[in-house]
Length: 489
Image (cartoon, rainbow, N blue to C red; front, side, top):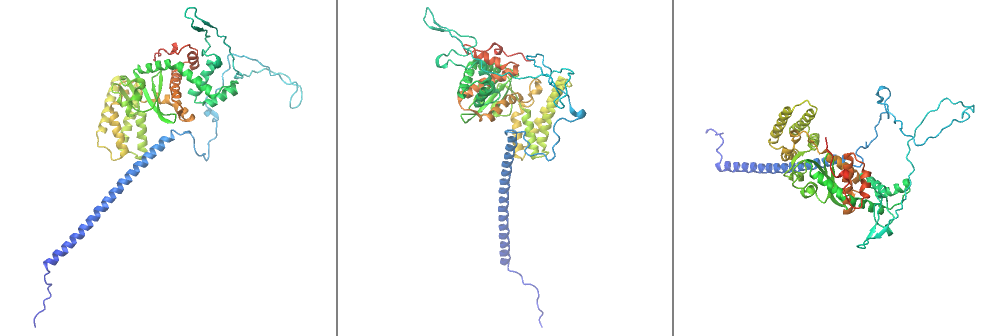
């Protein structure tokens, strides 16, 4: 009987090839699906990355808005268990103080004892006399002046000649014969331009407190006239700033007839000049100091300032440190930002130690070189994958030459605080008066009068006396006290 063959017969080669082809096609299909999934995942990752960057920008805007809101110091919610108000008892009370005794007494009144006790009706015996003082504002009423203006004619040319008293602010007669006095106009200028009080409230204050009736329109005309009289003084202040070896600059938004414009401030230790300009570029930045300014410009990182090619620059380290803190809130311990922050803070500490006399000129030079080298080494590293950090690194690259100027010249400020301080009153006025001025003429008066008031504060001068001098001048001129800048020690 023949044996059974159990061996598997050989497979057809064509069948094996077909199976391998089908497997290859399946693998190719799987690869195609994987590539499509990877592409979709990458697109989604990019979308989420853009969304994160957008949310981070909104977060930055919200953080900045906290410092610009109408009530930046409002607590928002009541504390559950607030501390007891007032001073602490005992040794923690602090320095005890009281109003000093006046050196001059204008009126004296007696406060006699009653003849009988108000509690038991028994006779009262006097023991001593004590003195109490009261500092009171006098009741003010308008002082009406009448000027008998003598009018004549020249015997040669027959032209009309009119007399003028030193207290007069105008030569107008007829329908305009009733004028506001220089003290009144100066008071209105101070209330409006220094304290941001609207013309309607100024008119109400003059009426209720002083019994002086004046319309808002009358106040506006009086303030505009004060600005016309002060125009030469404003030009002198601009020239003083332009000729200063060091100028601090900053700008903020300002509305003129509801259009967005910019209020620029150029500040020296003794002079401030404001300018309301329609833009934020080089032409507007150079309106006061000129495009060829060759001194030191202390400013923030706005690009228009870097276009002053002939000037030396000091960028504001406070702005840089603020960006560091904001970045570290979102990216804690980010290496690049952490190291930049440490370098900037160390540079400021070195500056302070130099001013305190604990570091010599040689020590300052050595530290300066170290900080420049460390920051330069950081900026040469590959950019970060984080967009905001990469932008910050790019900003430091363009600002690199202006970061440590205050270590080359220790008399320079490391920030633009002078200009920011000069803009604060304007920011308060902007919040209270609808964002700016209603007309271009109002903007011109704003920049002229606020420049004079701010400069008077810097120099310790009485702004009212300056305004009265300007208002009583026959023609617009510069008061002698403002013709030259004081020497700053």
